[in-house]
Length: 100
Image (cartoon, rainbow, N blue to C red):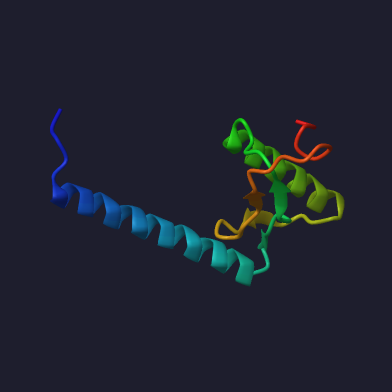
């Protein structure tokens, strides 16, 4: 297997940036046509980080989508990837952090 050169890395980085920009443009166009909405999760404060953060975030997203659907939202839903949705303080609290 060939090792990546600096040029290869820059090419891959550039391609990824283009893909991300294209994805964002497509989402913004859908929002402008009222075919989609951008949702932001409410900020949640935890003392301890979830055991599996990806599963935790997927569950929160699914719960939020279910809530929006129940309220009548029918458009595509995209989450704001740059919004802060989880704060981990490192200080566990009884009744909040031991429910998991």
